Each structure stands twice: as structure tokens, then as C-alpha cells.
Image (cartoon, rainbow, N blue to C red; front, top):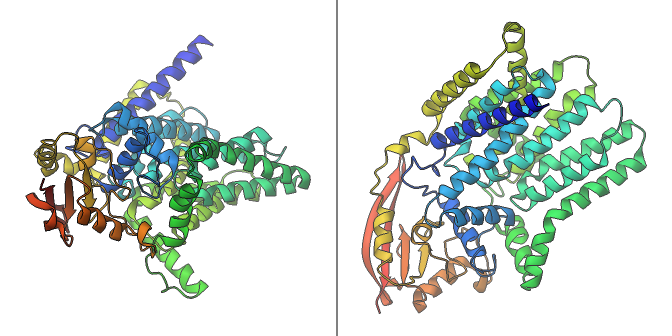
Length: 501
């Protein structure tokens, strides 16, 4: 028993070290990079900072993602107020959970022998992909709560489906995971809709309609649990409507969709979705190769029920629809799809066991896997070239200029949070602290009109502007610095204005 426990600790330590090294190369939150100046990640960081500094999110400061994203970023902020060290550590913890449950899932199909070896490989092909983007995306943050759900689903359908219905405690756990995803970025809920639908069908196969209905209710109860802290938080602050408006209403009814109005028939919509999937496969061929091989493997493997064989493709399909049916596509949206690479890795583990049946993989196999994975990330990740970026990033110069003022206030215009809030450790004093691409008719809730009012009334000490100079800014502000910055085909002009006192 003691020996098994020691082996498990060593194995988990190997997973943790692997994740830390992979992210050290692949995530711009890592200390190897000058700064993670991705505007999305900085926006999440500023929202998390505001949460832990007494601001009520959506009402006092605005961004339209879910509360668990901001809460976790807030914990990262507590680790380091002006760097992304805390975000890197957060990514490591969540990545460890990913790899741990990849390992558990692979072990269901291929046994324990090579599962430890290939589990980190699954994570390596994910973080080296284009969809991983700069590191710290909402999809990366909620991925562990999908990976655990995929494991619970596979554990039941691969082992117990033919004998009994899914235990209600497992259904309840699935609901909790779905609730966390719902309060992070709800586009991932397509996966859990299919998850519970297939579990319900399994109850019907076992001729237990009443049990299936009960399971659905238990799932919904579990899903409700993660809402409770935020119901209390917004309820105490009289902000339940602001929560609904900022997270649900804006994302469903306001947030613009790419190509809105162009797709008019079900056939053209299906064509667009199929074309997009083809493009995503090309852009992320690493993990999609394993996912496709894994789907073939799970469809053909052994003597299993047809329902089990097709279930993983159904999960993928509903997740894909939930993310992309609205028509928008940004590279990091597809991160959740990457978890299905685990089935291809299970196939690989089974092949390795047949080829190397007399070999017992140990430390050397782990070390070789780790080294090969890091080499693969080094030459595949889009982020690695940015390690060479000068440590003299213009934002540090802007930071020094802003910090000449005691307790400065700041407004970011023309883009999402460019990173100056982070470097200066500034908590926004304006609701629309960054420019949101939201077309809202109500003037009080229109980010463009509100930001124009902030400038017109001189409500902040400094204004960071990207590209387009706001009207009337010279009434209260003077230009003190500017810089052209970008990469590849993207090039922007940043201006720093200071209030004239």
C-alpha cells in the first residue's frame, strides 16, 4: 500500500513538472516572456483585481465573461499584483488537473502501463497549438472542468453502461462541473447538454424513465450549486440585474456576431460550420490528428455497445455547435475541442503496449517523453519567438510615466486592456475602463459614449489610446508619449495622455 502511494506521488509530481515546463515555453504568462500583453488576459486580470478590491463586477467595472474566470484571475492577482506570475501558477494548477484526468481517461482504454507516458503528450499537443493563443484564455481556464466531465462520462460508458445506470452522485458531480463552466463562459455548455442527454438515454435503455427524470433534476441541482456564491454576492450588493445584464443579456443579445445576416438557410449554415471545422483542423493539426484517430479508435474498438461507440462523437458535435453556431471564430475558441485528443493518445498507448510488451516504462521513458514534448513545443508554439522580444517594452516606459502621479487613475481607449492597469497596479475608477465592441442604444450603457464623457469631463489622470485619437481629448489632456508596436501583419499606434492640472 505504501509503495503504491509513493508511486502515485512520484507520478503526479512528474505530471506537475511536465505541465510547469510546457507552460514555461508555451504561455506568455511565463517568466521567460517580457510580459503577457494580450488584452483579453489583462482584462480578466483587471476584473479579478477589481473584485478583490471591493468593486462590484459588471456595475462598477465591465467585461462580459463569467465570475469564476474573474475569481481565479483575482487569486492570481493576490500572488503578484503587477506581473503574470500568479496567472502562470494558475495555469500550472489547472494544467495539472488536465493531465491527471487525461491519464485517468487513457487508463480506462489502455491500462496503466503507458498511460503515464502519453498523458503529458496530450497536454503538449494542446499548448503548442494555435488555439492555445497567448495563454490565459477563458477556454483554457474552464478546460479542466470539461476534462473531468469527459473522464466521468467515459468511466461510466466504458465500464458500467451495460450493467447499470449512472450513479446519481456522478450525475450530481457532472452538474457541478457544468455550473462552473456556465459561470466561466457558457459557450462550453453544449458539451454538458449532450453529456446529460446521453446519460438520460442510458436510463431509458435500462427502462428507467423515472430514474432518468430524477437524474436530470439531480444534474440541474448540481449545476445550481456553483451559482450560489454569486447569487449571494450580487444579492447582497443589490446587483442581480447587473449580473444578468452584463453576462447573459450582453452575450446573447448584444455581442456582435461575425457575418450576422449572411447565413439564411440551414444548408448554408451547415456548410459554414463544416468549412470552419476544416479550417480549425488545418490550424491545429497536432491535437486534431489525435482526436480524429481517437474517434476512429472508439468507434471500432472491441466488443462494445453501439451507443458507447458513437457517444464521443456526439459530445464533440454538441460542444462544437455550442461554441461556433453563433458564427464567431477566434483562435482560442477551439481549445475545449482539444481534449478529445485524449482518445488518440489512448490508442497510442495501446499500440506502444503491443509493440513494447516486454518493456516496463520508467523514469527514462518519462524523461524522454518530457524532452521530446518540449522540443515539439519549442518548434510548434506560436509564442516561443516572442521570448526574444526586448525587455524594454514600451508599456514599462508608460508605467514609469504614470507612476510619477500618486494614486493615478487610468482609462484605456481603442482596445481592451493593453496591460497598463496591470503594470501600474491600478484599480479602474470607471465602469467602461476599456473599449468594448458593444453597440448599445442606451447612452448610459454605451461604452463609446461613456468613454467620450469620461474624457470630456476629465475624470481620469491618464488616458492610454490605441490608433484613433478621441474627440476633445486636448481639452483636458496633453500627449506625453507614444509608440508603434505590433507583430506580423498587426501594427498599432499607442498614445499616452496626461491630464493637465
